[in-house]
Image (cartoon, rainbow, N blue to C red; front, side, top):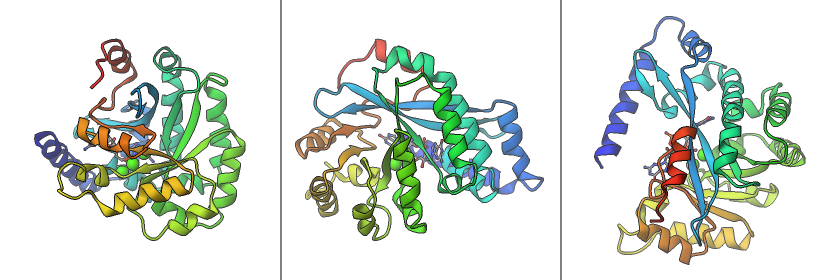
Length: 277
Ligand code: C2E
Ligand code: CA
Ligand code: CA
Ligand code: CA
């Protein structure tokens, strides 16, 4: 609770700071890129049965000289609004590639690397070139990339379907992020070929705290099952939640119960000293 409060306060302070930047705010992000103020942390994803690590999600961080560590929620939307999502994501791709060699010592061949893709980038003219360059910068054939796209963003463009086909042709998988929080996107589940459903933290939170488990979560899991989709639960914090999700057939788990997001160096140490929860 305290940590949540702390992160909440930090987010508020950070967004306040961002909103208060009157002078060329765009330059802040660009100079942050130039000055190497952005870095990546990795959150392990485990398979729900034996809790074996099967991959990790890349999460961006900004270590700002005045505002300190700014969480992504405070600057991603802002970067999108300022047309800076393309340079920022290109930079993210470089940071991921720089971690790849060390990641290979921690993650097995075929491990899934989750990368959050902002819709503003997906629809940018340079998107395909950026992705091809990114692919070429990774160790050949070692990792399985998974692009995480939010449910909300799929609704915007029906041409997303051909883009998704192209992504698949490059051997990249697609996950719907924050599943269950969007609005009536269910119809799109049948139209698109999607590989993973990431069930939003909000639903996972409720497991174990309420006397009756969420009927929405029940429906989401039934639906995922019927559509033959692989499921990932995010925000798993307690052993009870993990147990419940495993019993309900959820395939992969991710959350503080297993690990906070870690720098690649911290990830090496975590892996070495890991004790199963
Ligand atoms: P997301 O994709 O849903 O990422 C999961 C968020 O949940 C992360 O927050 C992670 O630190 C947090 N989390 C993971 N496990 C737990 C848990 O057990 N309990 C709780 N309370 N939280 C947990 P983070 O890193 O602050 O990222 C927030 C959002 O910012 C992400 O949500 C994603 O939408 C966006 N984001 C992060 N990195 C990038 C990026 O490189 N590019 C883009 N476009 N968006 C990004
Ligand atoms: Ca994500
Ligand atoms: Ca998510
Ligand atoms: Ca989210």
